[in-house]
Length: 484
Image (cartoon, rainbow, N blue to C red; front, top):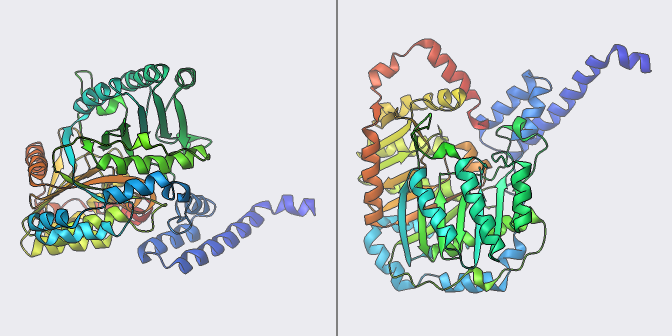
């Protein structure tokens, strides 16, 4: 028997592979997911023995319905329920907003159906362009912390800017300030020395879904792509900028990095706090005390309406994607989108085409050169039908554009962590701030127009006549689009 196994081991492995592959294919079919994604998995499982199974088990599992998070403890907390009641919008607030937003009120109603996305009115915001501006404000706020600091980031590195930030939170922890920090185990890199310093200083820190070989896992599924900082429950940060030197433009920077972040003072910070606590409850695997001090009263006098939309395998719906689609479908004047990764689903493509064809000014900024040739080629494969419908596509060439923003009709804007791709819509944990305010929307619109001066517009006729080898590469990369 042993001799038989030795002589035919490869044949036996192939049989086992295809038995598992058939089981996986049946599972994919029964899920009734997007047909394109279904076909992609079937092709990979059928044509690539062993490799196909690895790809499926890394990227093919869907957890939105099975809930890898258990948020029951946090949601049922008396403090959370009390805060939720206080954040419920009064009818007069909605009436005032309705006049400002016209039909865009549908967007608020869409997310209001989710108890984790209350509309908050009393907020003051600062839109921060690029990492050097964000970190100047953030480091100052961290130094002034009086009660607690909560950090949740996809990437934290102990390079120059990272060490600066980490030294500050260590100092604050030694002063007796509560410091909690969670970081994605794939995206982040912290040395053993830095982890020891954090431990000795009293900083509570946990990786999100640890992996054995983080350097080899690349973009394995269900990563925490959020970037959240909360200081004393009053000040919050959310947006595209991670904690790394890559995001800070200095005279020594090899690549100019164009990004956008948001600083919030006011009620919306309470919603950011809620989402941080659900993550913390998960990564620590311990029942945590939800303190009233996490949700202090603020004396904010400004009225910038904000909803915090979070999505991921722990949410019942793809909240951010649905908000983006609703905003596009309700646009009347213009839609300006900036995204580093543009691998949209059919719904987004169709919505943008329809908007452009009925006369809405639709403009899209994407990088001229991406940090991934597959993502770049896949993105290029989606551009022709948009250009044909009248969408203006701009390629940012000054450096790398990493901002994830959209502004519509001078009354709605979103800034957050969500890219316009399948990974952000359906796989990773993401969070966006939805802003209903003409003043802030115009600031973002002005920046968009400024960024266009560092772009080249795609000419439709020239684009159609690009080399066939490019088109072939794009078509090949597009096969992988549902998995990217």
